[in-house]
Image (cartoon, rainbow, N blue to C red; front, top):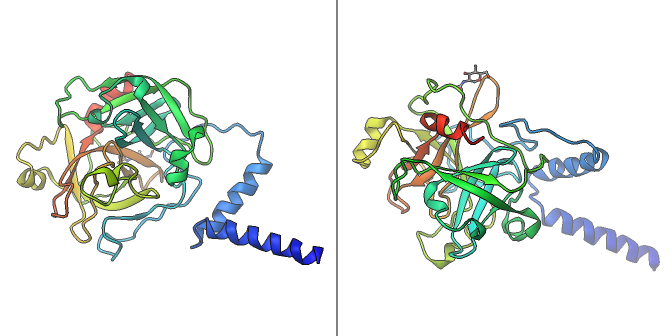
Length: 301
Ligand SMILES: *[C@@H]1O[C@H](CO)[C@@H](O)[C@H](O)[C@H]1NC(C)=O
């Protein structure tokens, strides 16, 4: 009797664990990291930009059939991606960790009192975003001096009150170092966010349950100007996936546009989700480019 209850208990716990975790290959990845964590408990890790403990899902081709509007990311596979919430308006934005105490986001996301804005780091799904242990206070923010609402030079640097601690769920992304390394047309890039599926409205406050990612192609300035007459290639990038209409949505603002460097295999932050179609019509999304704003960003790192 006691034995069978014991077995039943173990079985239930196992089933619960498996069912609350992604099963499609990520479970053992996750389990391995949990075991590793127990054994490496004392080890203090240092930030190493653009690398993740968890393998990302990288679609091999832009025209591979996928779920319209992106797919769920592997848990914690983008450990520099943060959620920024405004406690007053309940508006949600994305952001990216670029140093132990610095986050980059869109300027239009954070025009408010610093006490009203919290950074949520190390979260993957809604439970993580509601977990107060993942909340970080900010000390100050610096809006790009050329910012015009909305959305020229739509970029801001956030300085945190306390440093982030490097862990399996928190790391930094790399910033491009060379201003001359502009992205070539059709470079594949990944954009991420918790933005809602809906165009606008209260249903979007919490956005999607888990972090979503989409594959897009960087477009030429001429192409971007055809859609947005005010497009400024010094300030902005535009990217799109015409095949399955991946685009950033409301709530995705401030999030990362990331490109993998095939030489060092690290991820680099090339853009910050700024504005775009925000609708079902196929239009490219516009990102605030980081490469021409490196002098501004570097001042505050
Ligand atoms: C990729 O990384 C290599 C090695 O760090 C570097 O030399 C190169 O400039 C990088 N390429 C781009 C496009 O950033």
